[in-house]
Length: 266
Length: 120
Image (cartoon, rainbow over all chains, first blue to last red; front, side, top):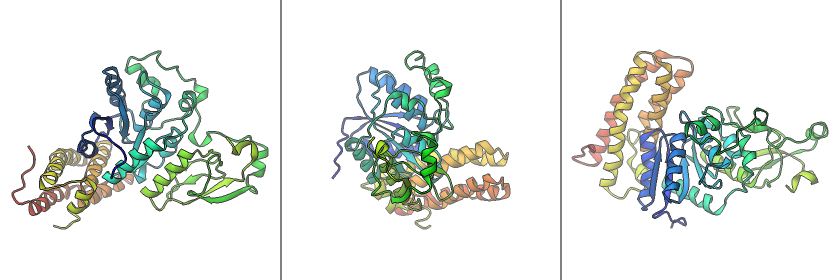
């Protein structure tokens, strides 16, 4: 019944909690997948570089979000920015729980391929693998990902230093840091003037890519998942659908700007 | 013992388990990993060590939910919630129930699989 063939393929499973990691690994090894285990983002990157050096082709990374010292966000960012030998388009599937929603906006900006809930289930895991394989995001340039902040983690430059990969990745300049909700800001002035009278409420299902949020998209407890001015990619819309499956209390409607010709066709 | 102590049917479905041996392996791994984690958590609670209480409670909660140990997970969620307001009497009260909840998981499994013995 599963459209994704995992037999003989390598998957990186990253979780600092032994049983949760075991549960994912077991679901994969049951179908004869090969596993590379790691307990946080830094050990995952190291293990991936070693695996690639040995000629192993990694199919996907399945990672928890909250880990120390390097969390799932920084791992995702490291992959999207590009470590030597690791494809920037590597599928990354991320576990999230309701209390982790304050970090998922950054994960969406980093083009995470899927969110899946804990506890893991066979159905959710294989659906996510299928989505990652058949509906990949439209990936951005490495520099675009470089700007996305990753709260609660050791940062990429420190990871690079600790792994002895100085020079492999261009250092980030301080002024490049922007908050996730400020990605793709619209021009101020005119847009601000039109904001109130040119917005409409649209469901997550029918909303089209390229639309720009006119209000924050927040969880029921007020955490900002995607900030006002975020330009919605197809992947972001799909990930919001993932999140609503995980927490049906999340709003199903979004406030977006009325399309303006110059911005809507991006 | 109820399905709240250990929901084996849900575990079998979610984890694609096929027989008693699969259930024994998975729950056995959980029991083996959870006991020292809960002991660490109780030590952290005893010294009112906020950081370690949070760390161990969060990790143990993830495992408890993964295996379907609902009652144990509820105690751990309550500990995490009480930590936000430093409600130590509540944390200590819940902490005192952790090992008995874990024992209920084992007992439920033993009822489901006669002669169950945790994996070495």
